[in-house]
Length: 241
Image (cartoon, rainbow, N blue to C red; front, side, top):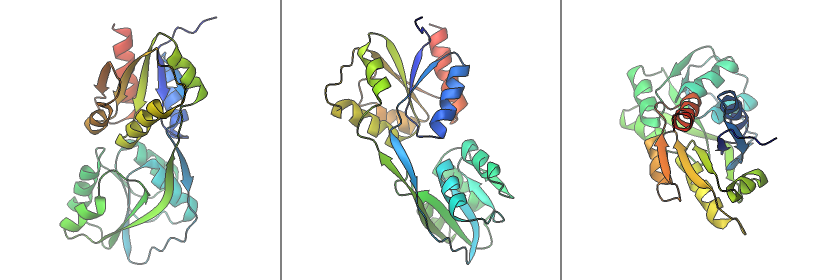
């Protein structure tokens, strides 16, 4: 039996990729997993001496901190709802939520400065510079790199097969770096045949700007910076056409 559900390539690494795939499937879409990156959490001693608050710009940062440190008493400042949900899941006592980007997170921290240094727990590759933004406001801050997001060279076998069909496929892109990696995969995968029409669903304007150089017939930006909004964007576009 053929599966006629609209297809969406899920570029997020697990566990976020699997969670997004579940949302997409529940909305009547057919998710195809093809993570652009693999997340590798480092092992490190976390020194919280003089730290008054933690700042997280991704759920992976929260997971990496939780894997290396049992302390949950410091205030946790999260860049957006998904990161905040992960902070609550690992049982941080106090979680403060910004509206989805580094500038908003810096403004949130600045509005009620903690009594001590802000420790930004992050990956080796980052979008924006939270430390610089905080230091401009005379807030002491430091960065602790606890995970690596390593780019994959090629698309998944399932994605390659989907691209060879004459159909329309949505690509879910959650960060500028993901968009960049995906475009490199498209151009660098040996023997890849692209017969499909490609549409890009982007989490933000910054992601859309990076995707603009790709072979997309259509680029759309989610109304809010959330996985649910991404699914709703694709669902509305598909089922209204």
